[in-house]
Length: 188
Image 1 (spheres, one colour):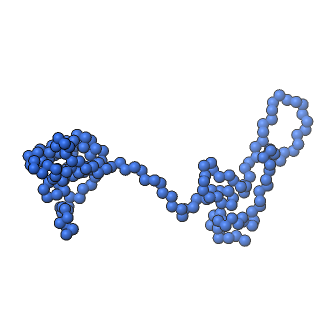
Image 2 (cartoon, one colour):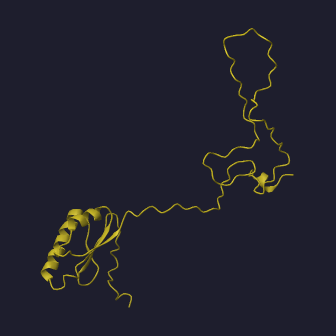
Image 3 (spheres, helix red, strand yellow):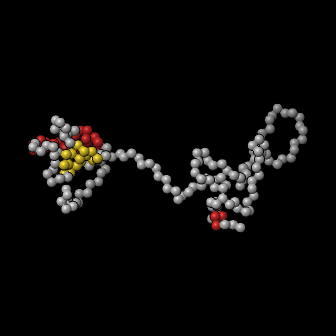
């Protein structure tokens, strides 16, 4: 009697073989497989070797799984692909980063190296708050950032009301320019 799995043409997960299927005839590995042929009459010895006869594959025989298969097998030896198993690949390493840049000991900003990274997709946050008492030097740093950003064809955004915390978005980074709320005032 056929079951539901056979109706849909799927292997039975319980391992019950179908009732109407014959068990395959097993041969030993030493015994060659040949087709049924009548015996040859004795012929004089010839110098040409007869070609070996290869039998067609036996249907319904147990199959060996493909090389490298480590998953479950059906009772027939077929690889069973369980679609309910969730296998995730490890996430690839990130290609973009968020870089925090502050002036060095000489109060300079490494704009050339920074914009090389920005053109690779990194977003740079430039912090000018350490230049508290140097208004003219802050303006010089802002001008330098603006010229380098114009050359790289990217924009510079102020993240605070005093323009001391600046953001340079990386290549292919989307910035929402509709909202202009800065700092914690919007949250309070």
